[in-house]
Amino acid sequence: MTNSVETDNIVAAGKPWSGIIARGKFLTIIDLEGEQGVDFLCYNADRPEERYHMPNTLKASQDLRLSRGHTLYSDEARAMFTIVEDSCNGHDTIGGCCSAPSNQMLYGVSDCPGCRENFLSALGEHGLGRKDIVPNINFFCNVPVDAERKMAPTVFVSGYSEAGDYVSLQAEMKALAVISNCPQMNNPCNNGQPTPIRVIISDSPYRP
Image (cartoon, rainbow, N blue to C red; front, side, top):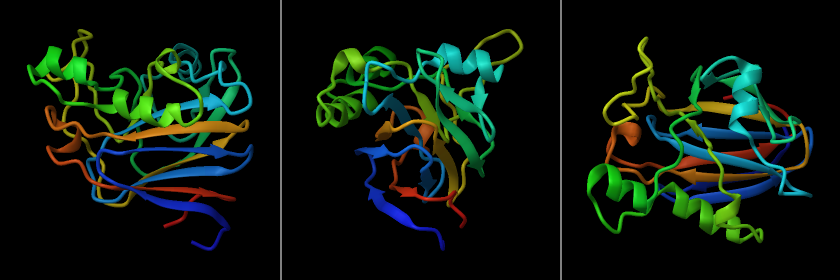
């Protein structure tokens, strides 16, 4: 990659990450080994009460899956990020984040933290908390909905991303991005084995 890189981090399996992306910069998330879910939230970095809003984003995209050309909108209907590159061609918007309570509810397992707990950890570094968690995007995740509007019994099914697949977003405002590299092992979203991801902030879209 020849463009100027501001940060380049490996996020360990099951861990959180957060960062500030200046307007016009690019945030790239790379699935290093394939089939790894990445939960994503974003906020106005200067006024975080403005944040990602799933309904506005879905109404604008007219699609349950986000991909290249789609824009992530805030609760004030302002553009936050635009997806400019996507080697995976589609990401979940409706499955939400896993958590210790939902793992108990859905799978009968106790003391099993998830992405919600990762979000709380990352948000705490920016003075934010539980009230700031909203329905998120799940990059590289597959939540199929059939013609009768039914979902799979596990909601998530095996992902379709391959090693090296990536999504690159351009910031439309100065934004706080918060990521949970999903630790889930009770459904197929991570193929049963969470793996690391790579997160890059740069001046131009990622080119492998």
